Image (cartoon, rainbow over all chains, first blue to last red; front, side):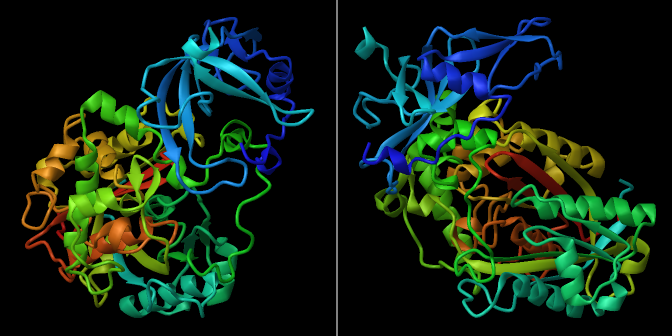
Length: 139
Length: 381
């Protein structure tokens, strides 16, 4: 990446703070409903499936599969060349946007449903982003 | 909504279209509004309801000298105007107002009088969980579901490119269309890559323009100079402000909910529809629209368009103004889809569908975030 300081950075809110504190410690944190068991993302202090306020934060496995993506060709000040913008399906069910890193940014290398593993990128003292890389790279 | 209770009696776009560097955004609203009032034979004093998106109804009412008893500033993106039509019909039925002006104006290309673009959204969910990964607006985010759609349905990149080809054929019949020259599938697939797998010809235009509509009760509609276009039914819904959080990438929940509601209210079947507009910000949108509204089975829309069902002479003429891909796209295109449906129902469209009696204008807001569907007819059924 060319210049990480040019990334539009997240501004954590009281309801999402735990997530960003988690990535800083290289933990991918999701939430789960105590009443219906639903695991969900993005963070909020109630269950979007049943509206229960009784929810807990838990650490995800970090395993995911590639759901869909584009390879952006327009220049972005924070990126070198073309780059993938992807949505991954976490092992626990929720989906999240990310970049697929440590692999060529090509349709040949990025195959839907390939297995991925979380990888953390420290952007500032406060913000660490959750990226994903091919599982074979991690092992 | 009671069938036929409300009709569109005024409809117009801005005097100019495309690149309008000498006009501010609020004046694009006003220009379209003045044209629509002239079309309906009304003055600002005859209007008592105002709905708009992109500017607040306060700004528009004051600018035009209207004293409204009802306003609607619903802003859910490019389909906001479909929702305005729906809400206006309910308001007229309820007696909250009697003549509603709906306006759109957007200096999408020239950015005259539009205020600041973007910025300051890092605290939103999309700002926290999408923006940091390098999304650059709709071209790199609205397009994100499509590879999954392809894998699940077997749809091909040629079928995606073909959407732009067929719509360009319609645009060739429209003197006001931005792009009219014929293109081939190869032309599309060799055009500049924007966000794989989308080429520039599969992305909408960025232009300036506007449009306005005027609605009154069906009983009054007969007294106006133009042929009334009746609202038979309508639908609306929203799903998510984050494309990454759509329930499924091969279908839009907001499309399905809005479309079903509109068909139910109108009491029509798919075979009754003579003309269709599906907001095409990108070339995959017609696939989702055709399937989620029930015109095609899941995964069959690409071949349906390839088989020329939506082309000139086909059984379901689609995006007959050339669409966002070839006609114009100011940023919130829903108004132009509505305008083309009205022209088709009045029988005055440049690419007129012979004997068309029922038209549907289906809009999207945000990136599969919202949806609105309007069923219109020129018949007092």
